[in-house]
Length: 144
Image 1 (cartoon, rainbow, N blue to C red):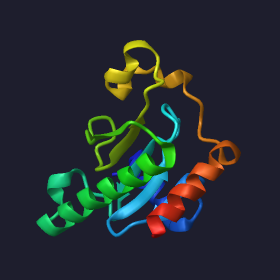
Image 2: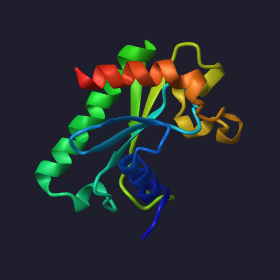
Image 3: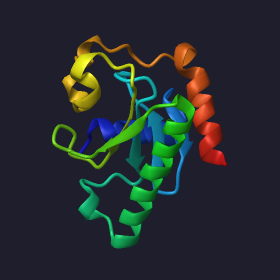
Image 4: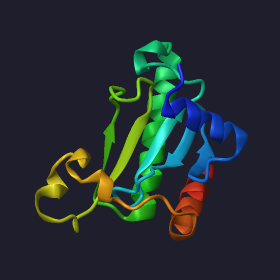
């Protein structure tokens, strides 16, 4: 099966994904495209599996630990109030974890709603120039 997750992992392996932050023990940390919230990232497993339960217990723990590690880096780099984590796999039936920074400056009720409440079609695309400093800061945090 070829999903967007499979294609992004292949691009990360090839070094051609411009959103690539770092290779972690369980997979790849990448910035989200679009940047629906500034600093939105994902963790993509390598190898790609259909869901968390397809991993053996040790690999599950490693993936979840890497997800929390990425979240901590996003929290520190963005200065967000908190991090929201999500794993669904409904539209893209391959394991991936969303890491959303949440801010006190989010408009109206959006700050307490789930991130899919935002109009993703109006979110700006990842831009290597605009997001380069954040990507570099995240990379540095994850290397430490």
